[in-house]
Length: 310
Image 1 (spheres, rainbow, N blue to C red):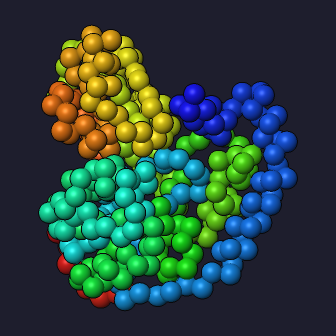
Image 2 (image 1 turned 90 degrees about the vertical axis):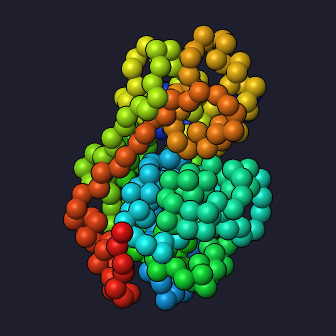
């Protein structure tokens, strides 16, 4: 039931039917109130400046838009880099050091899937999860951070930073704020920040490693239909809600049910399956970012002092 509700809400926000569109119009007064509160909250925030350059990769809509792979693409270009994120759906609380320059210090249940993906993909970086981003920034500074990347940090208006907003290609989604549409804040904020528009400022390149004749796609990412254009049409698909913890028994059952040789999945999902002893085929995602965007980020970082590159 919970899974059905999740996918119903996802369709309501991004690809609504006629009934869902009518419902969104009925909820417009709540959307107006929500948007007004967010405007006041942002205007009242007092920025705190830190001695290390901070780059935030975020979006205005709920759900996935490529924040994690874009952050990886940017962060891999620098030394002494820290990634700070909340660690959504992790089985832990507070500030936790997930990795120290590639040395992984905990497990995926403690870190959450996104933090573990950063830790395993960026061997030169350090990763911290914390609900309190300011506390995590101060911890990173004390450990010698030269640059910090905030995953999903746009809403943290009290932190002085370079804000990068990702603008995904949406289908039938409305332009309203929650709960009538998918926007967490007003769309006009696109005009005030550095915006990376999908298929214009950044693009995705996907290859399948360790392919087999009979692969079954299993994924628990937001809007998993985004994967459709990268996989052959004959492959069966099983989708779970974003950040769902997939068990070993579930995967064995799915392999038998669909008579598959391997589980085809994303890197973000694979970190939760690493210890299952199940053959995996991986959708390897690479993000290509326009050089002029990279130059803007470089210039921002260099304003804080010379930054050694890898």
